Image (cartoon, rainbow, N blue to C red; front, side, top):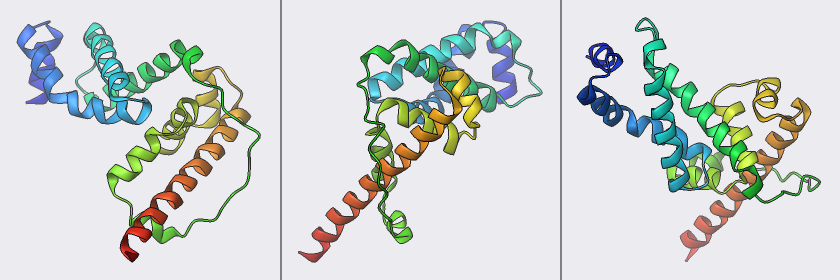
Length: 182
């Protein structure tokens, strides 16, 4: 069914393009939300991604996975969006260090919403590097090439992202524990 829909969309059938959009919108939004700072940014990324996908749909081979192909487009669009809006993001303190250990059981007690909210609160660069490395599986040199920064800086950003997430997880856990005590 999906291949049939894609074939029709490749022929620029308007209804098929619309159905393809509706079918993959949730999937695209779930990826874009991880990379963006707000729902509005995610919507922009999703719409831009669909426009790029529709423009290049004739280049897609039905032998490949559409989700995988489209996922790449969403990630690249997110990176492009980040680079385009870089001047709007605040500079971050890269010199701050210090690791606090985190009980591994704490993560099991977090809800999906807690985790997504914590990711969403990371500074743009940290969130982008974290997602690309930890979730998408890019290597540091690949991330560096896409973002125009050295691989060593990517490693620093990843360490900083993990530290900030650790701090947020500890804070959430403390709030939950205080609520349980009362």
